[in-house]
Image (cartoon, rainbow, N blue to C red; front, top):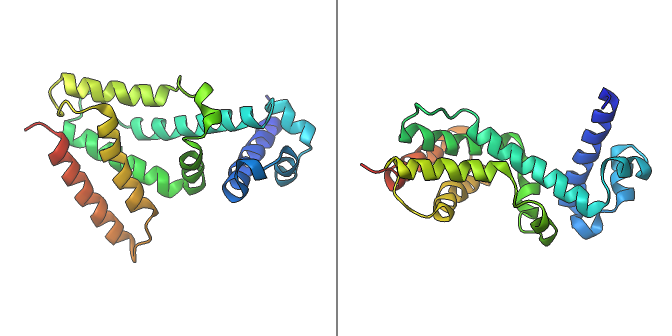
Length: 188
């Protein structure tokens, strides 16, 4: 694709995220997306077959980006404490730095339209493999990955979306959460 084409597609994706957060899936039309992106409806159809395919592709890309961001600084020589801290802190930073994308992926994560094509995502599979490896190496307790996901990431979301008086208060909450989750998950 030419650079101009990538810019158009990025404008379309940004418009999709913004409009779907503001107006929901039903309230967002191809015409509205095109207008917000500064392109014609025909241009939108060059990139996406229809609105459902658009939602699937954009959701999948942004969800994969979230997992990639969380996992990219991990290395095989890290200790369990470091891995847990890195996962939590990277997820927090992703939410803070990508608020609209985070809210978009959160809002549409349980959308029925996504069920048909998002089961093959690499990011969740890579995180599941990491957790399984940590359990096999006796680094973390043998809890189900679903429960580990819930206790790792739900509290991070709460800290990231809550308005604190200062960044230092949020940092204190995050430090405390890291400590708590290390105690809960790591084997002594």
